[in-house]
Length: 296
Image (cartoon, rainbow, N blue to C red; front, side, top):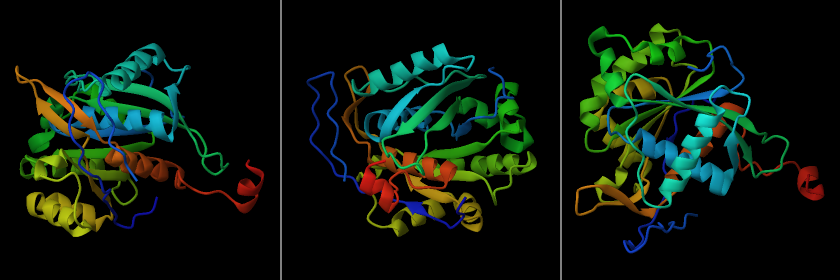
């Protein structure tokens, strides 16, 4: 993994909102056996309502609608459940329906295979196992507490783990100490931050009044101001930072939030980071001269 610090800052634009249809227009953009290790596990960390499920659903939608083919891994114990979850995520997002909150004391696990559109042999298909947990469970590690066994077994297992650390734009200042507790927990479990694949994501960035950042310094300064301890740890180990927005969200007459304009630019950036972290090659790698010349 390349440990040079990077701040991932996609540029997105605002579009008019359309509330008259259950189809959401897309903004244009420039426990199963833990012993099975032949996958790349992606662990989401974040407090309740921080946006973990929204990030996951939009990443899955981007991977399957623009980057390639995403399908359930059929030889896993939860392949049928994974297919149901995948269908719900992909079907709901274009209708403006946001994901339900994750159930406490269980890990939502989706085993998938992603096949990129890129035909270069250096851009291979990969196996992805997404792990999502309830934000309430993450409070358990405060002041030296322990995780529920359903989560702890994944963190203790000898499996390739990638971490997406999520904090809400409005409540990031409340997450600093808890984020530090989680990073310390990883170190205690033998997952050195010097070699781990991890990225800090500030979700719901549209609450800032903009769908993007004006410069990398804007994001860096925000994290340093709201989460100084976490920022210091990320900088020391050269870990990545980014922001996230799924688009425009409005509340209806009964207080339910619905997506009214889908934007996949930040889903693209985060998905590309994940693939590059796992494979070591950019998903947009152009291929060798002979691959381009012969088309294979």
